[in-house]
Length: 289
Ligand code: PXG
Image (cartoon, rainbow, N blue to C red):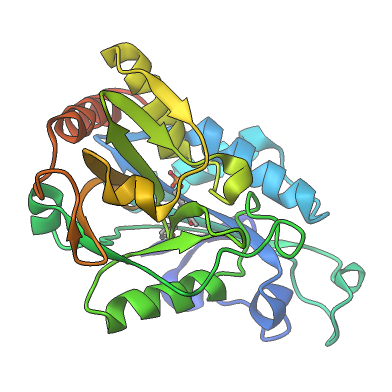
């Protein structure tokens, strides 16, 4: 496997970062996860735009232009001879002194991995997921800005652990006020009385690229869309529920906290979104060859 690291494509065994890198020492950095289908990177520009916004929010000056980052990403995928897969792009604060001060890290480090990812076993894409509500809350915006896709994922990891320990594969995370924010690595949607509904970004949801795609598709499919605060009540009483993410794609949810949602089977609107999403993903994107 070839990894892009600080300007060079190197063999995986040579792709190393310093133990003094603040990304490792403090989770000080940002990242993106994107997919490529059929020789094209899906929504590459949107991912890179979000990456730069995350970096800006934490005062990390990326020493490459957005166009360069897009080009490096394409080169990495091409160098690995893959047609479909997952890209993990990480920018860390770089090597510095011990101690929190990021100004003592002269140069950020960037690496790009082109590989594959599977968040949930295949059968759940047809049969749906059974998820739980976890006690771990999504951090308040004043603590850790939820729009920043930072390397601080401990919170999400602890939420994921709660899910696994409860025998589930995913967990709904609430915000400090008790409203639904999202899951550990995916945005959440429900269908109710023919409308598509998803939590507000201000409730702690990541401004997901797949979330935006679903909103676009709702318009195309003539499905009314509402963005508003949701509680567990809204999920318990929903007609359908599904999760979205670059890694997760679109996956139906059939149970929350052992209570059936709707008919207890993946719903028809969810099916339409899955089909429309796959069509779009397979037919659009930035070619990398
Ligand atoms: N919420 C969170 C907290 C995420 O990390 C999403 C939602 C979905 O956003 P997109 O833009 O992908 O539609 C994410 C996505 C990984 C990995 O290991 C990354 C994510 C999720 C799961 C795994 O690279 N990020």
